[in-house]
Every structure is written in C-alpha cells, then in structure tokens.
Image (cartoon, rainbow, N blue to C red; front, side, top):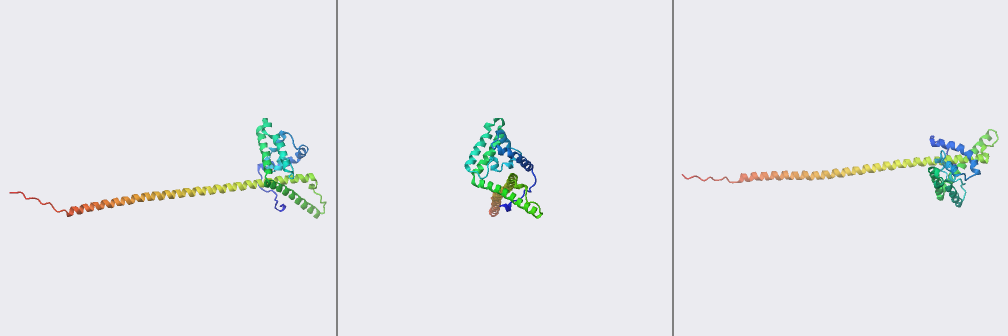
Length: 255
C-alpha cells in the first residue's frame, strides 16, 4: 500500500489553504487535547467547525478523538459522550453551529459502524504512517551518503505522530477531492445520457407524427382522386347518354 501513496499535488483551493493552516495550529492544540480529550461543549463545537473542517472531519477517528485500534464498545461510549456535549438542546445559545457539530459526530459514528468503511479509514491512516516511515528511510539514507548523523526529527515519537497525522489528513483530503471529481463526472455522464434519451424520444415522436399526418393526407388525396374520377366518369356517361338519345319527332301541323 505504501508504494501507491502520492504526495498531494492538486491545485490549491481555499479549503486546502485552510487545511494547511489548520494542520499547523492542530500541532499546537494536540497537547491540550491530550490532557483533556473531552473539552467543553463550546471547545468541541469550535474544534469540529474549525477552518478546513470539511477535510479534517473526513477522518472519523479524528472526529471522535479515538485511536483506530479501539473496540466497537469504546466507539459507542465515546459517541455518547461527545454527542451529549455538542447536542443542540445542550447548546441552545449556539444551536445552529451545535447542530452542524452534532451531525459531524453522528456521521463519523455511523461510518465506523460500517465494517468496510471503518477498514477503509484504517487503511488510509496506515498509508499515512507507511509514507512517513518511507520518507524517514530516504532521509537517513541521504544523510548516511553525505557522511552525516542519520538522526532525523521524526525520530522523536511526538514529531513522528504529528507527521503521520498531517499526512493522513492530506490523504483523506485527496480521496475526497477525487471522489467529488468522480461524482461530478458521473453526474455529467448521466445528464448527457438523459439528454440523448430525450432527444431520441422527441425524434421518434416527430417521426410518428409525420407518419400519421402523411397517412391521413394520403387518404385525403386518394379520396379526392376518387371523387375526381367519379365526377369525370359521371360527366362522360351523361354526355354519352345525350349523344345516344334519339331526336324528337315534330308532328306536322294540319293544313
């Protein structure tokens, strides 16, 4: 899987800039979250709706603040805790944002209930880890070639963890953008096929109408021709009868 990992090179978008900025900020707040994984309702809502959240929240484990190797029971327990914190009823002074945060939590929970979706998320996280490990090996190899100490900053467990976290977010974002592009392409194809179907149906309708009008007009033309022939025949017979009629004999008057 590590051989297929690619560095993100797509054009920069506003959300992508937010994501990069967010990654830098997240590295600092992770220590706070580590000390207090629950946080307050407001802090959780802010976390779930921070700039770039549309990409951050693609990782269901990040949304629920749990490790990929936790049990299903732990996932359910964490969902209950977090959903209570951000529920709109508990945050009526900020109900609209709370609703969005709650939806993010609920979506992540439902995704992890699906074994296939959960495995996909775990695979993405594993790919991020393998990518960083590969980059570390390349760095060490280059340092050794240059005759320098082969110690790299990712040797620090915390730095390694943050590097994996950032790479994982990039992979989730890349997959989401590709999914949207694929979805847009499929939608365009469905639209094109539908337009072709409509055009085909309209063409068939026009041909049926033309055929119907042609047959109706043909019947009219045939009737007209028959009437014309009938009139001509009648006139001819009338003339013939007039020609064959014997002349009237006039009686002579007496003298």
